[in-house]
Image (cartoon, rainbow, N blue to C red; front, top):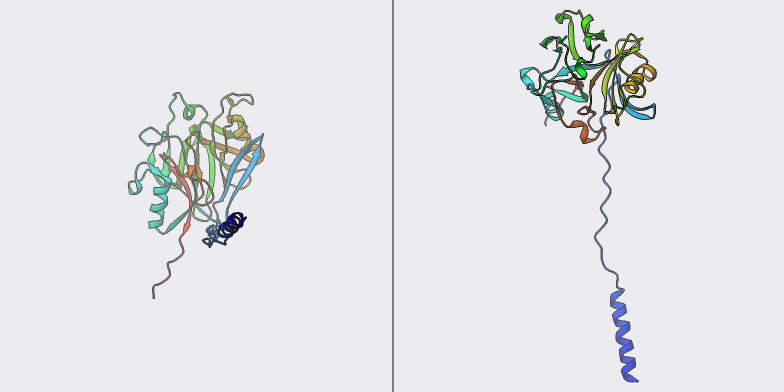
Length: 280
């Protein structure tokens, strides 16, 4: 009997040891995400759904913002990538707000067609006939001209482009044209089976100071992408920029996949960095 009482007592002691309160390390406090710099006045970034597909669309008002083309001047390399451009801009006292690839380029990084950066023509207009999307006529040129604060943008068919380079601040040629004069490219069919990522640029029909940069979130046909600019954005003129390699980067707002790749040209919206505080 005594033996059984002793076993029961030992069991209670063991249970007591096992149920003792153990000090645990404090739970880590959740870290709040870093606050994003607000988008500057004149820029919006939104998602739209059109014909069952989703698109990211940036609206850029040239009256308020600087839209520039980079990638071919010697100061930042013949072929540029978005992180390197962002660092280079920072050294110039500028913050990258938004960036996307411009027109189609050669395998060595040279643009296939017209490329004007900050008023300097670095690649000529290309009117040749050859295979590939760039040469799917009509192709077109997107350009920005005019004095600061009063700049306007346009998309024109490549053969009809007649601006002197001295009056154009930026230009990029690509193809095919998505819209010209409100008309879709004649090769775009609503039942086409070619589905790809698409990026492009369009100009507001009633306000040529307003530019739309758009990219599909998935694979879409040319017809559907062109009607996004016509029916959802109110454009009469728009240009395809590129396909599978395309990105639209907004630092802090778009995933890291939208900073990858190297391009013959990058269209970027920038703003001045705030002045550094003096050291005491």
